[in-house]
Length: 73
Length: 255
Image 1 (cartoon, chains in turn yellow, cyan):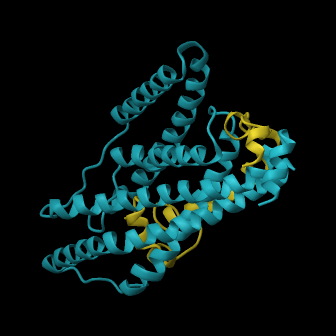
Image 2 (cartoon, one colour):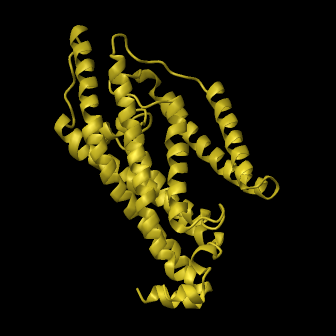
Image 3 (cartoon, rainbow over the protein chains, first blue to last red):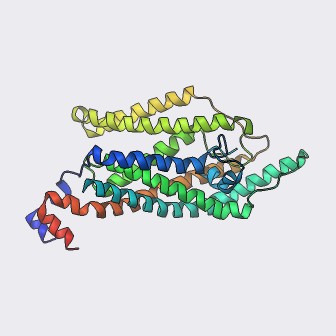
């Protein structure tokens, strides 16, 4: 607080941080895809399409799928 | 440095998503599960009335409503937490002069609308017993299409708003972008096929309560995420904002 007298505008008026796109892109691509794969398993696996056989994934997340708004069956 | 701040925000986004998922789980368990059970009771009564034999359950109801529900909701929370954190990295400093916390809350509100509410208004959540098994492929494809479309349109609307801001001012540019978003979404609603697969005799009140519960789960998730991630992001960014002003940096470092 003592510094606010020295630098009155630093807290509110400072330009917001802007991260360069190049620094975000690799993270966004890799983790974006990873997260979408997770969402696919929660939301759609063994429903309309299936990469694993059986019904266990579907049955296990059945209630979550209904309550999270995904078409279930 | 930029690399590590992206990583920090991503990790914190996933943690905030996990915490928000826990709160959403509480909503889902107490508001949602009674409706799921009631819908399954209706489904089984219908099956019994038509003489169908109910198949053996691969996972028991008690596991589905507890461990299964938790797995689904928490994974969903972490996944969207991660995605939202990455979107936050892009949004910071590009959506206007918002502080780290208000930017997080704004992003979460945008996420709720674009990821959930807009697709929900066209393809609402359905309880067990509602929905024809023969159209599951079509309904799944259209639901994901509507979600993807809604997110892309929301991003486009934000970019449009930023472009218009210098000419129209922030307020009118935001209104114009929101109106453009609403028109585009309305067109998608008008042209994509709808489904009405509620079986005869299914209680209207139950359907309404189930859908409200589903909406409450998402509202809990995104609100909690916005608030928790905002605090975590602000702390992660605090030393950085100070970088431009060495005096503040010393002040924040002293905490």
